[in-house]
Image (tube, rainbow, N blue to C red; front, side):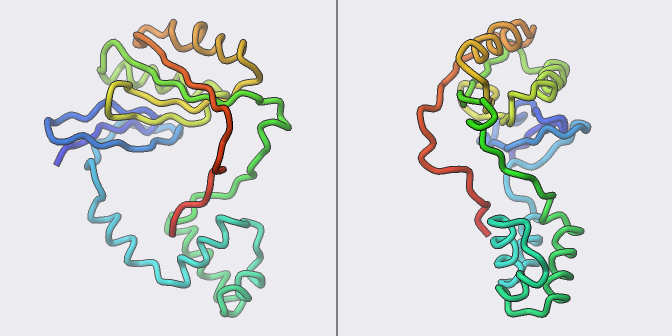
Length: 200
């Protein structure tokens, strides 16, 4: 099985072995490098079996409305409020629920341009990956970063106020980085399906 070298700061080196590559979506939390299997781990498979049908319904409900109270959850799940509350607390403590955030309207915030940026590196050593990850974490307009198979090394999702702002991000931030060789950007014309909940 091939392996990916993942960096907890949001950026991973490319896959290491000659086995078929895979990809991982990475967050921008701080941490150290660690080697992970390029596929579903045994722990992941076992974790899925720990969820019963009520758990998955609870998770689906909270993804749609995180403000649901224990009483409101109990009515949807046919449980008592205390049972619904305990299930929610268990799913939080076991890491199924990572946290709660507000979904903001980018247009109301003046972020009129959404884009995807492909970044190609000159070299793929751990030091370049670490340095690039620190740069990604420091830029608020870069909301997510993925390591990818294929031609590009990284895929960035960005929100900017306008096209000049995106141009500055590319030419004054990304391209000057010593590890970056070239950048390709694509502007979102319309988002046909909004970011939705994870399938449960």
